[in-house]
Length: 195
Length: 195
Image 1 (spheres, one colour):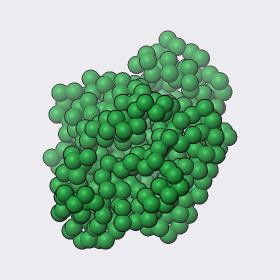
Image 2 (cartoon, helix red, strand yellow):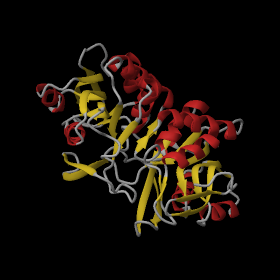
Image 3 (cartoon, helix red, strand yellow):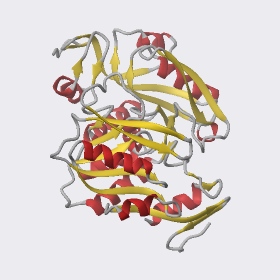
Image 4 (cartoon, one colour):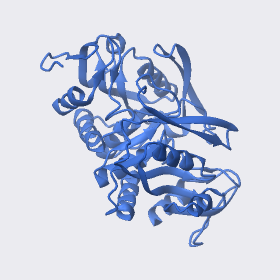
């Protein structure tokens, strides 16, 4: 997705070999118009697959997921990282290990909103080690739903998550794949654009 | 906003005198089409006020804020409740006291994305005791930005937040005001609809 690459090159910042800061438009400040284009692109990729629900995780997955849900005309469900007062019924939970923060988090969804009748598209902003995506996949499986595919805004292809998920047979589509980061340097996998 | 009242009556659930569960369409599962209508309504209310940025808080404020940002053609900034790896520069922070959870949280934004040149619309899903809204107002003030108004999806008008904020001179617009909750009972302030 060329528009997204341009945005990453113009407003993203590689802090080191692992961290790409995109909080100018994706995960702190949000560019709604870009989110709309991202939603259209995911809808184009996953159309005609009978998707009935989009599953994402708070907080940075919500904006692209809601725009995709609008385009595909399906509801969005976001897994919670913290317990909610009103999230009490038939919980499904999964553990995810955060490599960057060095701790294990529980994520959860209500079984009221994901059932065996659902065909799920999992969406997230980043794919690195794949822990969040695997956690979301487990939540979908706990509920009996069928996972049709995963859509990722930015895949850090030099980290193992993408390979792990694809080796399991999951259909993973990333709008942008980054093959290398270094301080001040961003290399895309197709090598067309380098900062 | 009649559409939102209908949604609350049909899919919301009053758990007790204080808690309205709306996680079927607003803060766990999200109805993207409803969010679009909410965005249009906020854009209608706050148009022609020179708004340059929408400020909200993770996670449930994000969906309505992004749709409003799309309609108004302005960026959205969401305050974080937890620390982020990449959120390091010129932080503004505020304390908010959660009555329901009985603890104090720090919320923060990067000063890179809110400056004295900004005219801010603060948006959130609920207004009850007003702590989150006051925290967002403080963050905006710390950055020198001008707060034009606040948009709330659901105001629990029997709790003190709305009065507190309006007494300070803040312009607060709520799409729906609820005057009373009890188990299985929802009363709107204009008394047109009762469940």
